[in-house]
Amino acid sequence: MIPKQVHKSSLGVTPILYTYLSTAYTGFRLRRILASYEVEASVYSRLLSGVVKASVPAYQLSVYPRKHDHYWRYVVSDGGKHGAS
Image (cartoon, rainbow, N blue to C red; front, side):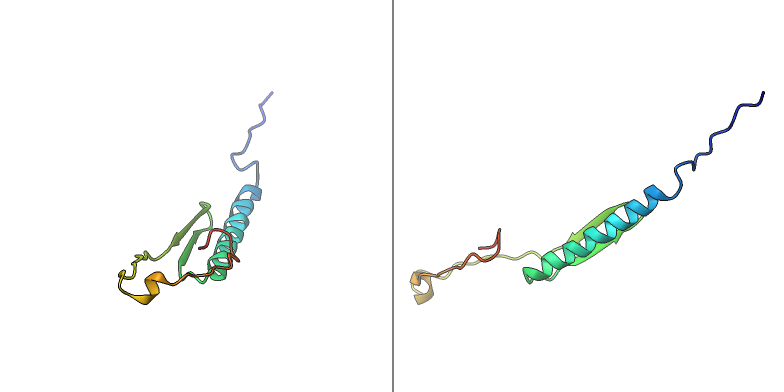
């Protein structure tokens, strides 16, 4: 009696398709979220490995000098987006 050999590809292409589609969808959602906050970023996706990478530019905040009129002005923020100031 010869034992039945199990092929290494017995799962088929389902895990590959799942990784491909979930990575593509995650990259798409990330691009839309960054665009809604008007952030200019580059989004890279490695579809077969499931890696999504975003390169966001670095910003530096600066404060007006105390002598400047804008330093003393009260700013009203509507807080329309979560996580944004």
